[in-house]
Image 1 (cartoon, one colour):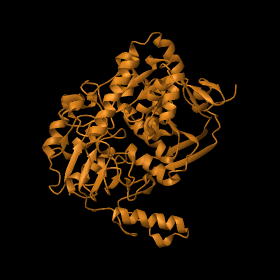
Image 2: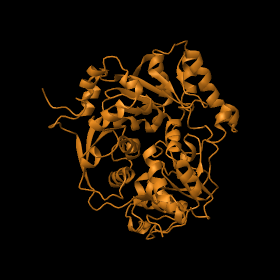
Image 3: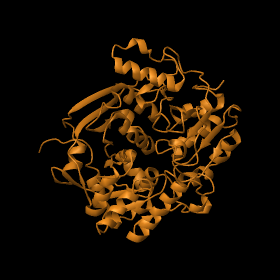
Image 4: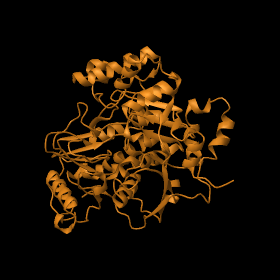
Length: 464
């Protein structure tokens, strides 16, 4: 038998033909599902398998007044989106975790917590960052609204087989280096189109030594490298995490499932279409300077100068990015003044992330010059665990606002928008123009750097 990559194993076990893949799990939220349900109604089509679906409103939900449910949503469009999701789920008997549910949160945080995400499955959602679930040796992909309808109606996805790319992290990073730094370094190395048409598989001791939270951060931003999916092989860490979930422990024929899950890794001699190596021996903390996730540098690395580029289009794009961000070529980011700090999103809103921030700010006070400093847990479970450990008190005593779960400041689709032209240090996944509000300047970084920057009121990696 020929050696196979993990992606090949997942594809082969689910492909119906060359262009159709069977889908095991379908996650839904309020933004990309209304059109899909309207399409079903228009064509009088039922949901093929309601038990394969889980709906979690997250993008447009408020992070305050959560106890009011939809009555607490100020924006009429957002309110209608959440209400429509509830109506559609009720009509089709789909499990919904509504705003007042104690498990409510970001769909890509909630799914794994509840054991909805299982190894060896195919998972789709009308959201780019569905790749997060690949940390569990799943084939997880973001899809558009038309495909959301197709999956609801047929339990299949029209697609084609991806190429495979192995990303091997070598060397030994310092203790200061986090999973966010690893993925930002990869993206800056290959660019936002570097993995277009590929499924990325992350390998190396730096990956196997990560917690599941860290692995989810890595897989989450695979899309920012242009990839359709990001995956990590099953191992003892995966199994330990899953065995902590009641729903998983109660699965029928669990021993048989475990036997299968333990095969979900690339074979030793598996051939990839492409391989890339990222050495971590000298890696420093990463932060973005521009309007693309590929623009990450260290705090002391000079920003590129527009005139250095021989490509006219590239030079023009660089100039536009610098102008938007209010920066100049040759400048370094260390000590750059910021207006706000956001800790949250499906990238960095898990308990491990909050512990890092709390440990750094404990007994200290964030800069009085900040307009906003928010910590938004990724789910009700994360929030309760943080409060059990007293992290909420540490964060609030330091000056952070402690909010209810939701996508929050990751994107400008809810109440948590920033003032026009302000600058934010954010643990989220995208720094596009206007992502956090009109003309808001976003710097992507790790929870560790976010904590130090909040204390100082400027981009930094140390407490002064």
